[in-house]
Image (cartoon, rainbow, N blue to C red; front, side, top):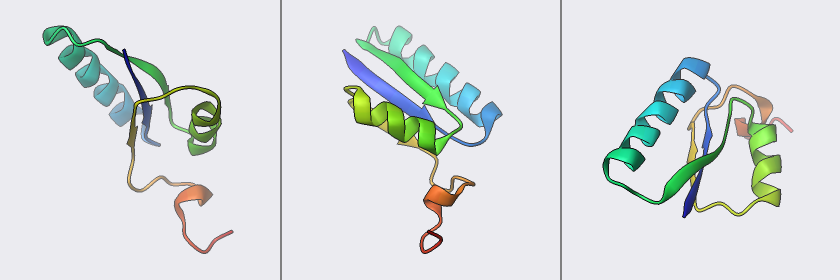
Length: 72
């Protein structure tokens, strides 16, 4: 089974993405699940450190300090 993690700081986008992925998995009878989804990059990183994951779908521009280079 493929374990997916989704992270996007925009909750409506995260919800839409989650529904789309669930639909694709069901429609094509794929062995996969959304193991974790969050609007928080720190929660997502914590989950990734402690759980086996196959695919991460990550917002390219998270609105928190973790995605701002040089702001330490």
